[in-house]
Amino acid sequence: MVEKFVGTWKMISSENFDDYMKAIGVGFATRQVGNRTKPNLIVSVDDQGIVCMKTQSTFKTTEIKFKLNEPFDETTADDRKTRVSTVVTLENGKLMQKQSWDGKETIIEREILDGKLIAKCTMGDVVAVRTYVKEA
Figure 1 (cartoon, rainbow, N blue to C red):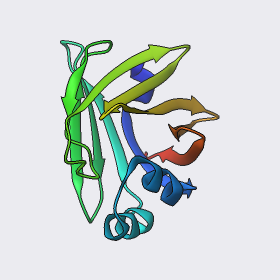
Figure 2: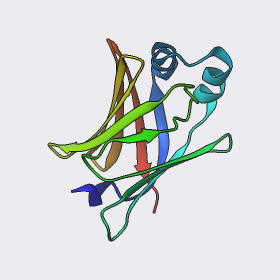
Figure 3: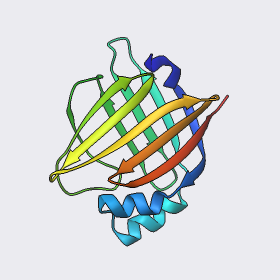
Figure 4: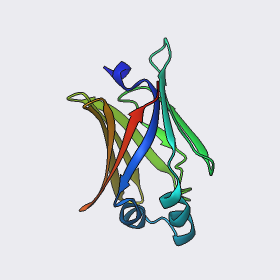
């Protein structure tokens, strides 16, 4: 099921991302850069079932590697200075990335709709939606 996410995805829109970054505690300067950046998302899976999600932009490239349902420590793109424990699951065809730190929790839900990858980032009642199209 992860296979449908595999490929290079180019961001075409980002809604409410500044409010989301603010909600998870990202500082002003990093938010300014984050709002102007339109990263590519590159998803791959190796023959051991390890998923690699690379977020690539002119500003910064980050990468996480994980197995579904196995918690791991994540170094986040926004450089949260605290330990972030992450687990990614597959639920109803959606990749659910749950990050936990300092008693807080955010969920990034990724799904394929009409050939687009939709990433819904939720922190409390704040929701951001980032939309990607697959590159040929």
